[in-house]
Image 1 (cartoon, rainbow, N blue to C red):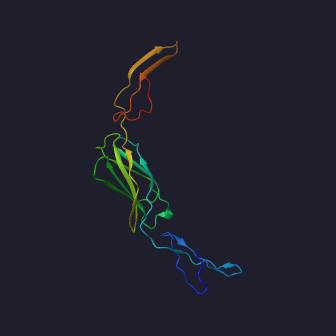
Image 2 (spheres, rainbow, N blue to C red):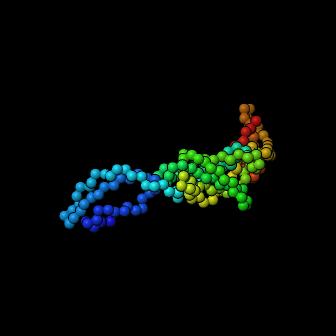
Image 3 (cartoon, rainbow, N blue to C red):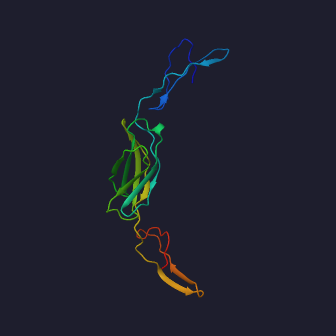
Length: 192
């Protein structure tokens, strides 16, 4: 901090964080050196303010059919800036102009699941997550693209063939299912 004139007995401390407890000490100095610090002041909490830090790592996906799963990195307590902290989740189908808004009134929350039977599997959504507290709504994250949950594959593998290798082994082969909106990501096959 800057040195204050020796005849001054008051100072304004700036650039503090909102809704944080601070304690202060004063140290006297002269041309010989610096003295011992004063005893700490009583703890003083700065006033609350609208939060200004948006959640990071907004993403999601997965979930069940007819679900849109949205996730984010929670905002640390020292950046919540006041009581009544929570998250505002906004999403819309890609290409739509109307946002759907949901409020998640939990400080620890890092996930929101929207369920609606009209959501088609693997549909892209624009998603952003913001913050609020008792002082008002704060910053929103940048837009992320998140896909709704998948359905089970609707297409069976084609070109199945079997070749006898030995008395105890048969090699089974098939053509893989190509990724598309109706099949989703094939994680594995089951041979029956």
